[in-house]
Length: 210
Picture 1 (cartoon, one colour):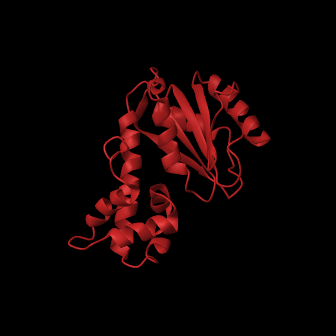
Picture 2 (cartoon, one colour):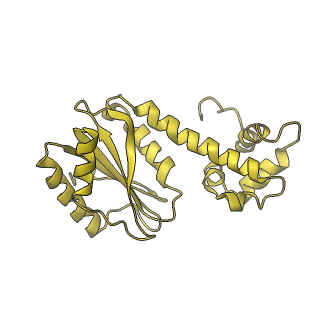
Picture 3 (cartoon, one colour):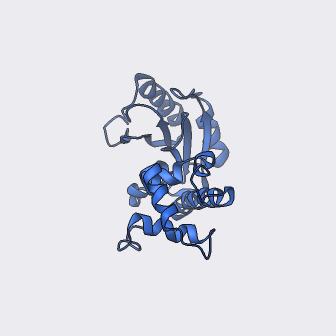
């Protein structure tokens, strides 16, 4: 999107999106108010429907339309990676999970299922656990069981830290080591474990923890 709309200001991009659900109306003021309120295009897409409809000129149908656009982008990023060697698209992998997890207010654990060539399988991302604002409970057998069920030969884990740093906790490191060993017994490779937070992204592999 950035390359195709490089000549546009942020409010102009939002104007274009708003015209899809608010035709035949000047939406410049609405677009600028959205940006002022939520800080960025990302902030607008991450905002809840309840917050969006507080903006004058934004009805429920327009708020829903913005959420649909965001969800469609997540699906596009996932399908763009399917059946491609995952290491040819590292930046896209990070972008995918930033898009999926960075706006959540509770921790979740997602798993990407890969084939023997380390390609993302079709419909190959699953939300396996949902936790609280500060923790996700990971059951060591659940990831291996899910990988076997999908016929995966490798997996990538991803979870978010809604508050605080992307740096892994002691619990994150322990659970990752446990899962790596459990997967190895089944001849399934743990390729990486990615943590998403507001201040950045952390890769266990890139930091020598796998």
